[in-house]
Image (cartoon, rainbow, N blue to C red; front, side, top):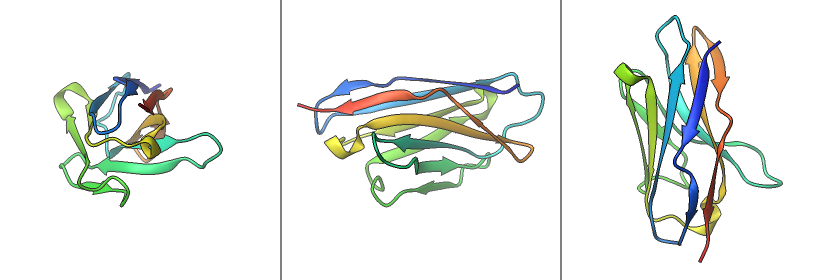
Length: 115
C-alpha cells in the first residue's frame, strides 16, 4: 500500500507563510501526478494545486500567485509553499498521489490562519 504523510501545518497569522510537505512511501512503481487538496468545515474538499512528474503545475484560482507546488521525485515528496495566507485558507490540507491510475490520500494536516 502507498502511504502519504503530510507535515508542516499549524497556526499562523494572516499574511505569513507556511510550507507543507508530503512524503510518499511503499510504492513499487513510480508516482504520477501529485497534488494538494483542502477541506474547510462544512465545505467540500477542493483542489488547491497539482503537479505532474514532469513539473507541470495547476492551481486553484483562489491560490494563484500565493501558493507554489513543487516535488522531489527522488524523495517521492511534494511540497506546498503558502504565502500571504488569509483566514479563508484555513482548512485541513490533504496530499494526493496517483500510482498506476489509483488515487492515494494522506491523513491531512490542519492549517489555521488567524490573528
